Image (cartoon, rainbow, N blue to C red; front, side, top):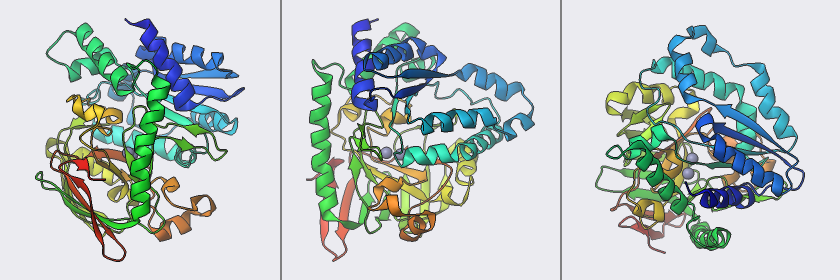
Length: 409
Ligand code: ZN
Ligand code: ZN
């Protein structure tokens, strides 16, 4: 165990990721397996002047037990006190840090109907909180560290201890903690992403056409006034933060009703404790009209039936093959990493911050310009070494954006 590197990582998360402010509260949601690291992050936060740190522990093995043994009715309600917990700290202006680490197949023996139901009830109860975070009302960040059950799925051929070591190494590299000065490395990285954002924002594309040999042939319309984002974001009160560490993507939103064609996933997706190896979707006027996910088709069916918006897209993100996570060659089986190794799309809710003037818009106004709304937001990976993306502006001018999986720029 390289305690010094872990502490360096915890400091980076608190300063550059969350950017904790003096006297602010930090809420840390963490698996119990990651407690030592959550404490390191807490210590770093206090050192940076946080007023308090609140721990919100979760336990995937207990969650599985509960799914296997508790009566179904238990999953039909969500406790008011948990809802109050998030809203209370949100109103206090807290920052929210999530340590996202789980066995990618933890719930494969559980009835998927039950998981889908619980997920829906939870998302619905926490809707105000989740929507406020997606509008950057408060600073938030999702990061990760290895757990034994996860690492053994990524590196099944070696011992558990070796797998955890190897996953740590890959994660520290992905978040640039392996450099002498990670804060400076992130400044440089943000500048690279900014160049891509400036290019895409200046092109004001109306359409993107994705094509590769996996079968993807997809036309994605972008709404007027869309904005490409990436690297860091700002809270409504102007505090800079990084929502995902690592992050390699630049992203915006598709026009809800403007997606047509077919798309095939290129990396497995761990969704609700199941590993969905491969998926394909066919879209017409934004809506999924046909899909297949092999033996997990039922699980994906449940997902897109969550509500009316779940069968439409809410995000389009570009990640070149020439990026550190992709070049590591590791399939992480965790979306935080895999989505940052690959171009991706998300089913469900769009980030309103991807539209100019969103602060002044109500739900109807957002809907009018094509901002999808849903209880879910599930990213899936579509990038490949032969991905080609052509942008078309409103005047018909075509510009190559991606050739052979990388930005043309
Ligand atoms: Zn994304
Ligand atoms: Zn996303």
